[in-house]
Structures are given as C-alpha cells and as structure tokens.
Length: 549
Image 1: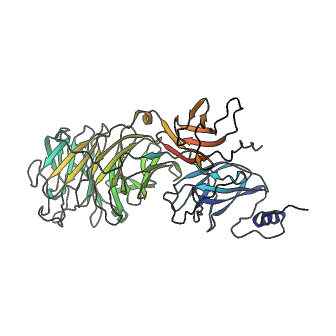
Image 2: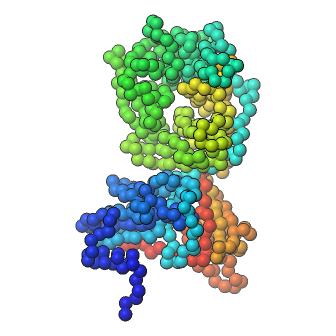
C-alpha cells in the first residue's frame, strides 16, 4: 500500500514523470539544465511576496513570483546565488549555495524574505515543523546601517561655524536677494549655488548680481568676476557652479537653452557653449580632476568636454563616480533609504540599507570626498508624507565598503528656492548655504566619527533565542571559539568582523549530560551593519546540510 501523498507533491511527481503538461509559469527544462522553484513569504508573516523578481548572480536569468509567491528558474547544473527584489521588500536579498542538477527540480520550499514594513495581510505565523523549516534570505553584501537619532535634534549653529554672513545688496560680500521677509509666501531667491575650491576658498554664484564672489577659507572677501551673459537677457536663477581640483570654474545655466561656461582660476572666460535639451534635466554639477560631470534627475550622470567646436558628452553613467563604481541613493520608504554602488554596466556591487527611526522625507547625493567616501543628505521630519515640514538634515559619509564614517544632524537651509544646499570642502567638512529673504549664511559642519567599533570594521549580530515560543534561559550562542550565554529574556548581541559565519544556538544542558544538538544559522556580517535574526527557535534543530557533489 502506497503512503498518502498530498496534492502538490503528487502533482510534482506526475509532472516529473512526464505524464502531464507543466503548470502555468513553469519554464521548460532544457537539456543539461534543471529547475529551481520556491515560494516567497514575508519573514514573520503568512503573507506571500507576489510580484517580486528573482535574478541569478552571474547569469542573465530571472523570474517573477506569481500571486502565490511561486517562482521558477531554468539553470544549467551548478551552484548559484539568487538575488530577490520586489515591492515592500528590503532590496537585494540573497539565497546562496542553491545547487541545481540536470533534469531535476530543486524545490527550496518556503523562502522567507524581509519586508520593509509589516504587510497589512501579515497574519499569524504558525511554528513550522522540522520538515518545513524555511530558507531565510540574507544579504551578504548588504550592510544595514541604523541611522543615528530617535528624535529630530539638529545641532545648533555656533558663531565660529559661520564662514560668511551676507546681507542683500550689490556691494562686496553682499548678495542679490529677492523677496519680502515679512511675507512667508514670497520666494526667497538668493545665490543660486556655491562651491569650495581646492584651497578651501568659497565661490558663490551671485546670479542676481551677475557675478561670482570669492572668499578666503575663513570668510574674508577677496574678489569677484562677472558672468558671461548675452545682452538683454534676464539672469537665470536655475544655475549651478562647480570648481575643479585645478581651480577651473564651471557655471551651468538651465535656461531656455541650457549652457555651460568655463572660466580659468582668475575668472577669465575660456569657452561657453549651448547644451542639448536633455541637459534641462540636470540635478547637480560636479567637477573633479578633469571634465565637469552632470548628475541628472534620473540618477544617471553625463561627463562633458568643452571646446570651440561645441560640447562632447560621454555617458550616461549609472550614477556619481566613486572609484571604479557609481553611487546611487534613493528614499525607499518612510523608514528606509538605500545607497547603492553599481558597476559601469549597472550591476549592483554593494547596497547599503539606511534604517531610520525618524521618518525620511527625501535623500540627496552631496558628492564624494577626497577619501573616496560618499556624502549624502537625508532629510527627516515628523508628520505625514503629504508636504511634511523640513525639520532636520542628516549628513552622512559612507565608505565604499559600507561603513558609516561620519554623521551630523543640521537644520535645513530654509530656502524655498534651491539648486544646491551643500558642498564638500577638501578636508571633508560640509559647507551648508542657509538663505532667506534677509540674509545668506555659509555654515561649516564637521561630520563626527561614529563609535570606534564601527570604524574598526565590525558589525552587530543580535536576536532572541526561544524554546516553544518562550525565552530560553541558559542557552548559548557560539561562533567559532566565541561562546556567549543569552540574557534572561533570551536576547543576545555579538560584534563580529565583516565576513560570513555559522552561528550555533544550543539549549542549556543538564549537569553531566552531553552537549545537545543545536540550531545553525548562516549569517553574513558587513562592516558597520546590524543583522537582526529575530526569534531563533530551539524547538526544531536543523542538521548541517550535506554537501552536494
């Protein structure tokens, strides 16, 4: 008598035998290949992750999950890593060491994926049996940084931080301002942009006075030069300024016809040229050692070279250059932002998740400092998403390895018209322009280093050990030769250098008894990251997987 087999298993057996056609969504199995399948379910929930995308690292193969969370992939025999992305999912989650055999179906069963926010249809999770133990997606190359601060608390502006303070006017150190300080509904149009030169001199694009003013590093006015402008044309307040490492000055005007003008370090115009209409989508202008770089509103960048014959554009590139990679930043949700470093081909090399306990309004790339760190601004505010008041800007510097190297919370610039608010000084400090209808201020901010253990390249692994749904006092957590006892409520914390580890959780052993079997979890740690394993159950130990030949 044959044992009872549930319907899905029976159907799978029939399909493998070739008696029935493949179910909808299942791809054909080419000769020498096998199939990988699984069901994506939100971690800690019964809800299914439909509409997600599962891709294979190193191969141009991908598949989507259906309404039931089921996905299929056809792959040659071998071992692979899968990357999972989708709506309300923490980006770039991975499932590693997925082995595929020719002519076989590798069913991963339930694959738990981490949601950004608890789904509305989360439901109640039942405790899985040993045979149903799910695969939990991890992100080996995805640091998860907890942003500092639980409340809005911008640092006060001290007198010694203010480099330049200018009033309305046309004189030395004054700026063309427009607006009525007695009326909040008036636009406060001031300097369109500014930049910090290679010697820490401050260059201010005083567009309403048609000039660029220069100040010493400590704020003393040292001169100005006029802007190139066709006679009779009104000043274009949508403009940006950048200064290269050699002192060359570039001014971008986003007028009816976008244009770019290059000046030498003394302010003498060298060349001016019109730009294609696509340059009206410029977000910021940068200048490093060579040609200027335009960061577009879609997150891509274009490098330009000026000459008497016009402009030659190179790109688009997938972001702001950081060494051999490109940086992208986006606000993923009210509580999450993502900094990604991608290859020239657009493949994600590293994704840094930025978790905030204060609602995020928007994110902006400030630039790349001379240490190769990405500097970004995270605007945070209490309140609803619909037109929230700006209350704080969190300035961050992040290394290409995913370490948080500096942070400071500053007040917003209070400018209702804005092209650029921040610029990076050669020593890594960030200069902020604060402007209203009565005054312009340039404030210097130093990004304070984070705790020493983050700088040292360690990450934090934490969680809670339970047995039968209750805390497991006396249980131990072991990583290599390091062993820690959990606290009375079952919680634990471990600081580990960046790497991938096998963490073993064991219940307390009676006196004189052999050490009990443990539950093992594969954990990937990145520098400065926090890996929260949630509740780890001792009720159903998982044996070490048998290597696939």
